[in-house]
Length: 71
Length: 71
Image (tube, chains in turn green, red):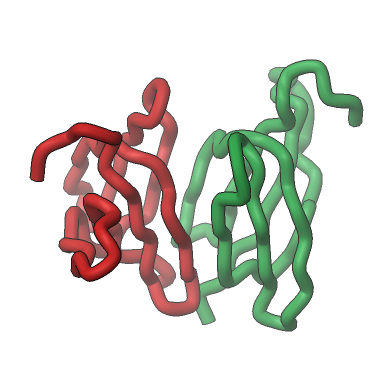
């Protein structure tokens, strides 16, 4: 299965992105810098942020939190 | 391998998205509504548009052309 793990970071240089939702199949835009994620297990989660990078072979998609958003 | 095919559509209801780049591994933002794509074969292509949908298990990512862009 070719799902990906979705990570979220504040964007600081030494910050390790934290796992937001694992095994994501579907990502749909839900407004400006907002996204609906759905995992292969049916779990759904909303995410606010912008795509920072996608590496599909590594199953790794990183979003950056909106400016000024807390941790 | 968990690459995806990237499609581009004008967004008309009956329009079939056309393949823009196959076997994409890496997608990186490159400015406002602009993206750098890289396939597992090393092919690179720039894309202008917004993400319309991502279905990773189906290896299918669809972008929508910017408003007013030609075919």
